[in-house]
Image (cartoon, rainbow, N blue to C red; front, side, top):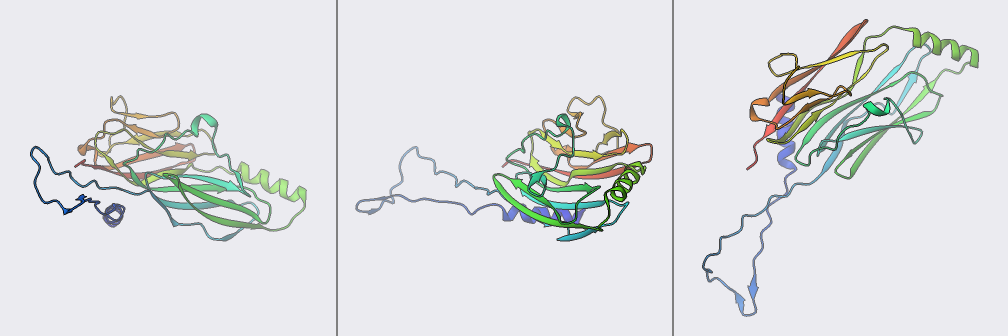
Length: 260
């Protein structure tokens, strides 16, 4: 965690642009006279948006009969990035409409996002693309999936067998680390793919289940809403997804940034 934190701190520093200063000349040359009641302006630090896929899925994979693939896309962005998966250039719909609503990222945020796509079936040559977006900028990476050729009846039996397989839930979208200004509201995503209905709950930095907290609320999507971020909120928040076959657990390190 400390290596990841150090890396993100270094990246945040690198995302800051150099100070801009301006000087004003009169027609006869530089005017060095101090003017009364004038306070020198403080140079403004400007930040720039950036998005970068740190870990892309392989460029090609083989989907064996009766199995499934998990395509992982790890993205660093400022502000916090989002990921959309495409199949042959068309959006892949993973979730119901009411649970696929991620609120816009706060402009002060920077985050490392993990997004995983589960591929249950494909036609040989299908191309799946991770499209990462942050602040109007994009980065993308594609994977071509190949399958063994078979007749329609064999393919149907394989698909039916696959969907009958019990499986524990998988958390498919989450931040591993996120930085954001103190006093702002922040949403920590926790999107889940589950064979059966899954229970989703969060633990705070003290490993207490979040329930009945006026500042922290688990949304219907499974995401965690933290309002009025405080310095004392710094630490790991844990999302746990459980169904009758098992559970999946992720942690998000939250770093509240002090505003100068």
